[in-house]
Length: 215
Image 1 (tube, rainbow, N blue to C red):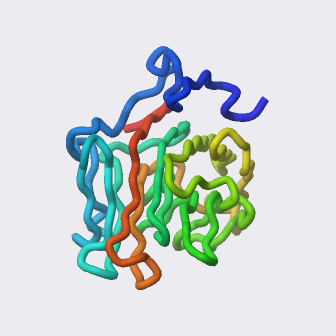
Image 2: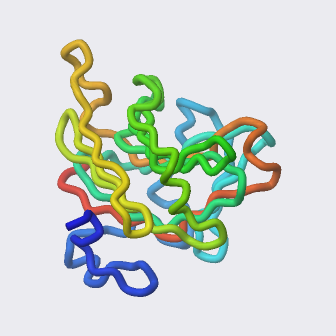
């Protein structure tokens, strides 16, 4: 059974009996309560707002980006998001984020040479798993369902995009040390740089989490 087989999805993509399965809605569709900019990493760059119940990210000032992260830290969890992106943008979902931005990133690099669903580790080795063919699954003009799980230390990371399992990655110790600490923030990204189309945006309509521990 694929990872999405663990959840019964309605036609809108929202799992039935979500709360009874232990999932929590961490984006409230009204404001940014529970979230903050990772100013330790990128200062006040990047812009995030809630428009018509959707979390929208864009560069600000032009060419500058940053991360928006949860105020809470998480260790082992599943995260479900409904995501849409203008073309081109470079974004992603970040797991176990540290103040330095050391983390695991599942890429939403929706550009000519970008990758969707790759595993990347800022400050920790770069690409850990390439996934260039996954971009074929990405819907250009509608929302995409992304389900990610991270468990244990060093972690196993699994990713499902639009109903298809695309990643099962097992990290390893590096010189006897863990690549990323076992607990950190969840983050979403606006990437800096000219390859992010002028005026383009990334959209998160739903963000839900099922966790086995957070602080």
